[in-house]
Length: 185
Ligand SMILES: [Mg+2]
Image (cartoon, rainbow, N blue to C red; front, side, top):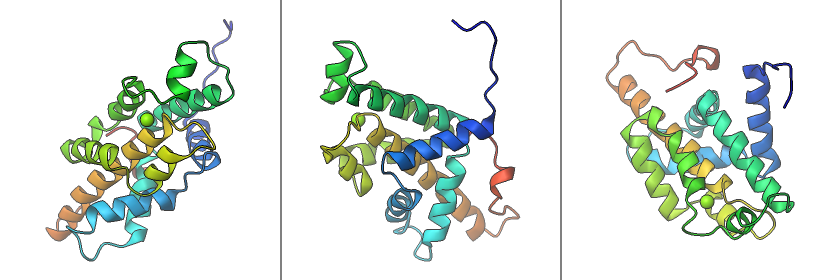
């Protein structure tokens, strides 16, 4: 136990969450492509730039950042054999009944409403794009990471769906700048 309490600022957490994703082979554009595929049928004029913007906005949420840090840390520790048994084998083997990977990722979709929840379920089952690559990778343990990407994409998709509707209805709501984004939901 450490005696002094170290306060970790949001900037540091945000930076680490993004860096970890990148280190594990997940680029923002790859998540944005999934968002595009999910939302394009409902919004023919949708651009990739809007999808990237939505993924960036989701990655501002503390709850998502925390889930990313926990999940990726466990993947890496398992990969390095630094967890005790039987947890090590459950994670390295991506045991189907384990479920904690889905639970952590699912926990961070509730703030984005029902579209996020149903999209998460769809992506978890269909495993499109980078999610499939992660799921099939034999180079690294991605037991938590594939579900985290499902969560980020589902959240970005739901967020975008609501904002596109706002725009279509010509309300006064504008796409906000990252610094104006609320930290939850
Ligand atoms: Mg998984």
